Amino acid sequence: MIQRVTRAAVHVEGAQIAAIGPGILALVGVERGDSEAQAARLAQRVVSYRIFADAAGKMNRSLQDVAGELLAVPQFTLAAETGSGARPSFSSGASPEQGMQLFERFLYFSKARASGRFGAHMQVSLVNDGPVTFWLRVPPQAAS
Image (tube, rainbow, N blue to C red; front, side, top):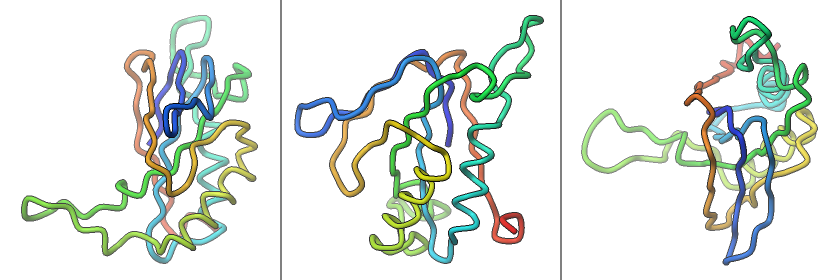
């Protein structure tokens, strides 16, 4: 899930560990069976997704085009199954080991300089610009 932001920050145990100015806050979820190819494709989509206004006010510019910043935050709850009952199930989520590995690959491929801490209890603050929020998914067949 990506959000266009004017600023965003992550705190762990009361200390700020990451912050950005204008750019994208990417909440990254990893599901069981996801691959490195999907992490690479998702990273490419995030940095090239055109969600910033051009001179005419149309969403026609990417993070790369505007030289914006990227803050990536691991978000295992995005893999939750919420179709029934009153409590989410996380059975479709990746194991912590696979989740950490693919999140780190996402950071590498996206060249993100700011990130949350995998496995930590984080407080994420942001000012959503727009608001503009999109849920990007990369199915296995699209990762090739």
